[in-house]
Length: 135
Image 1 (cartoon, helix red, strand yellow):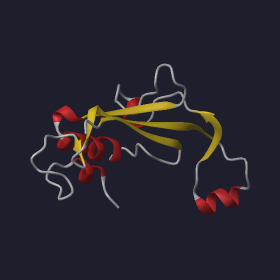
Image 2 (cartoon, rainbow, N blue to C red):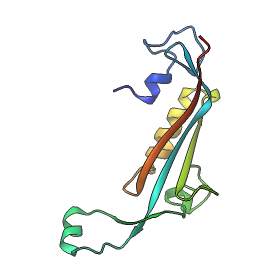
Image 3 (cartoon, rainbow, N blue to C red):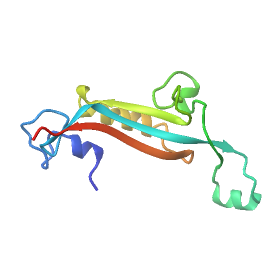
Image 4 (cartoon, rainbow, N blue to C red):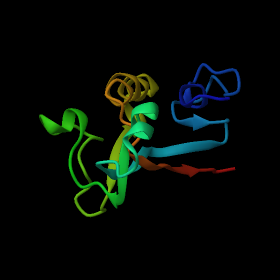
């Protein structure tokens, strides 16, 4: 599999090394950056036999979208861990590639991954980016 870092890394063998950051496969360029949006479900008490929950150690969910901060967002405003103001259940993380791929990878690794941004409450993950192909 190809990683996020590999695709956007200007030193990758699949990418023309003479191009600037944000160039993907030598003909597509990411415009602005990338947004990762997850939709989270509310956790709830499990209503099944306690022996099953004890055996599998899983969290149960209501099926309703979450509307509260989680992780480090419980202590202070932290991007990705705060609910979107108008889209119920959405939590967004932005990667501005103008600062370089290294910054985006550090954010993904040391903020999102370290604090389990994706966990058992994640219902959907959307990765959104705008590309231009001028060929």
